[in-house]
Length: 627
Image (cartoon, rainbow, N blue to C red; front, side, top):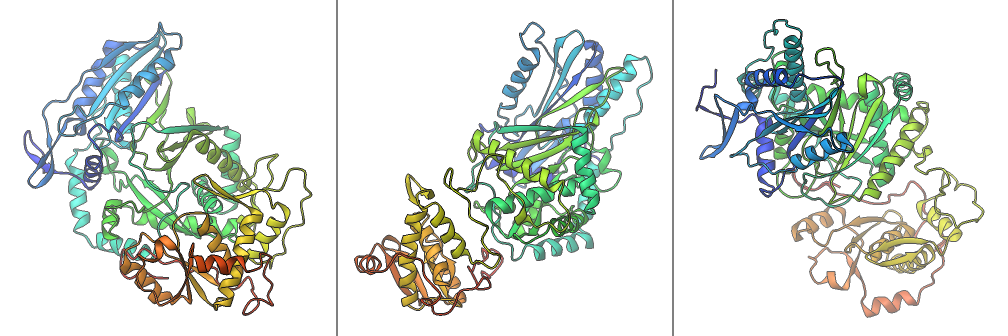
């Protein structure tokens, strides 16, 4: 099939995903603009460059696409002409030409684009000095992904180099854009599509809500926060050696490090990361500039006792399966899991492991590739690519400014690099609990100058560990929320009183206590009190629909329910005896109880590390919630 002038075509799966994601934003949002620039270290013949560029644009079908909303949904038309204008900007007179050029580019990247109006891409050639030039390309993500950018840049460099040396320009290597649609149609009608769908839906049927380094969600914006770290060739080689020692590739070790960091910060036992994939299977897809890339979830079970070898091995296995099933679109998986609407995430941080080098010569002159934006940053994206000239590694931490501050992003970057450095030296048997996120000079919260006690014994329970910390630093702040705070001593005392009340009402090891409290200091008191009593806590979000609360409590059958005076009236019947915090009778009962630590003699039975701590249910998006 061939697309002709004015004949419309459906969008590819990747294009459709970008279309609907863009349409969910306000029209003034430029979050899906992508941009790169190539720094050319040597003189450039501007007229010859423009000739090469015009030829390259004419060969690149994706740059001639026009989009429209129709009764049949979004459609694309291949126009006979594209905007082949090359804008020239001379920044050589600026005090810092490079900074001036980048400022111009970033302002352009922030320009909102209407998908039905365009223009959807722009190209500029900056002169910073007679022997220093920047070629900048901005394109909406519906036209190009990272690999598509690379194909266009390679062809431009090849064409310019041939013209500059008086040689014949090699034949265009690009395959027609419709080949991607043909391949996609064949895939979606194949048994492989059915197998891929079965794999993904089964793998994530019981997945919990993905955790991240921040809570909540926010729409992506054109501007995002960025922190960049450069690893030397020796440092990169050290990571490669460590990966080989653990039976993995360097990128797999890096992915394991992100999973370990997310677990260490959040405590989540089920970590899901987003992994961009090229999804270009076969030689045809590798020769078509366009947008094909996909983001799929990598799910990993992680706990403090997980060894480095076990985690890296799990990553190797998961990545192998993801690559095997990478043609299945992430948008389709969201649809299967009923995640297309709402704020629930499919994955936490995105880890983009760029597999291809991007430096390429223009004529006789070497270049340096600069990545400005790969499109929307919903939460946090960590990108790893080769350094200039293929030496070392460049690591970008990009974050949504509505979810992170500059200081928070810098803190995460620093502590992650600290963990990565430890994994580079770790043996396969080292546990994640043995790693540290503390910088030199930091301590784990002990009072300044106080003697540090010996570590808690391996069989110490969680309440015992907390009580030991409260004894060491009773005045230190333990929890804060909206201006209110509790010290370790205050939190421990309040939790002890509530724990005694829970024990008297029948809570203990082997029992479950439901907690229906909004985010607050009281919620922390309640969680700790249930653990001190020896029971397992069952969190109930008061904002949940009544039917979900009924379903979860019917499944778990909690013995008691701890809630608040403002929440209790709105809760459905759970069948559990309620203890209402803030109620006058409850307050009198609590004041009358001792605030010292509980002993096993006071509990219904002795508390051990093997007793259940909590019961968490899945979202129920694919059926009844599972505990």
